[in-house]
Image 1 (cartoon, rainbow, N blue to C red):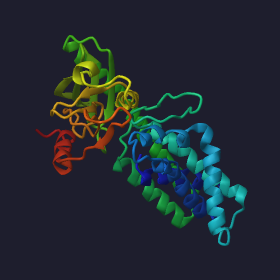
Image 2 (cartoon, rainbow, N blue to C red):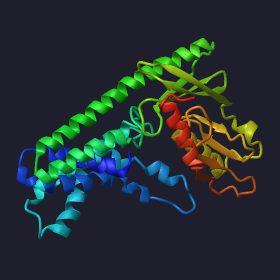
Image 3 (spheres, rainbow, N blue to C red):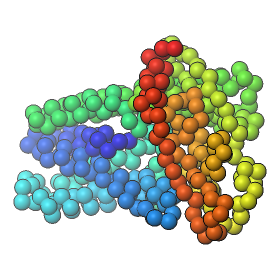
Image 4 (cartoon, rainbow, N blue to C red):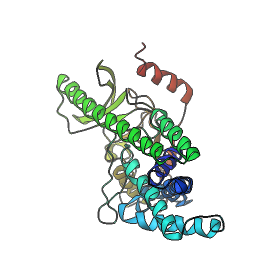
Length: 334
């Protein structure tokens, strides 16, 4: 999730422990530790733009790395602030470990994918029950946490955790309802589903994006689960056929290997861009749930040498207009 949310949840857990005098220190240490795992974004390469995808949410987010991550954060904080700390290193390590430990689990609740069991498994856990950014989840946690820090009240930090757990439970319920609606929609169309994913759209649990594969195509739709269920039918696109789409590509080239890497990252939900560019898109994500307008893609170059990498690109066009359109769907306006 976004850094502020990660920090807030990371702060709430250690701040919820007994001991009013340590509430502020626990919250501050947990807040910094809760964000620390995302320092893996610094692992980059100027020539291999896919490298950061492989390392983001990898070893720094795994369960076995939690005490190590907590130790590293505690060591930095102790070296920098030991003159002002009112607790010993062991207690500080407890706070940072608790804060650090929330990060991977919270990320796994989103749809991006987190390697919780690294190095024993490369499976990316993605429960898809909350958007990467969701103010209705974050703001109450921040308010309760800040008030608890001012009043030195662990009870308010516990209430923040209760709200977070409740909101995630609502997300899990909505996910199941959206999944059932998506399968029902596919059956109505006479489609045999090869695989299907549903995920919440940006900053809400009301409108969900459904993506499923059937008959060699990916179908995307907007779904409103809950009490007033409805479906906004979207569009479809052919699944990727690399030899047909890029007949010039050398199967032994680095770009071909990069396609395999991007396909693994995208869980196989890849297609050829329809705008004429030599790009491969991740069909799972778009700002609007009814469209195939990817948030990122992999650009190939027919003139590149065999050792050259493909280029990862992000796309954030028309954000304001897309947000207005999405809010119209959330509010059920035409």
